Image (tube, rainbow, N blue to C red; front, side, top):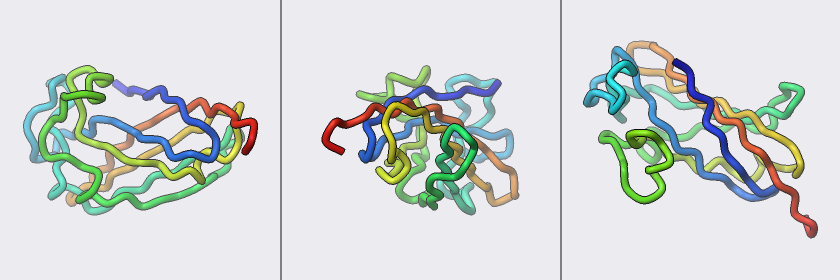
Length: 134
């Protein structure tokens, strides 16, 4: 099952992405939704790539988040994590450069390469609101 996370951002401002990355080859605890497999832990990750695309599929920005700063080894459920059914284990502040123009939608793909070369991808669709003084 693929989930596209829906979000909102303001042009020229960073936006926090929250998600839950799982895999059948990951070494974390079982996901709150067991059909997803196990949570990906920091030690499961070789690399992370985050790319933002405009409506034509052109890359706006490509970044390289770190596992140490963006992956949680246990499920997070407090405060803003309640937006995810069962909680999450990924939080990343996508830079403002990913949202240069208001009144648009930006597609974001985050791909985690695991130590066994398995890929896990998260998808976000972010509506970008304009700023009058931008």
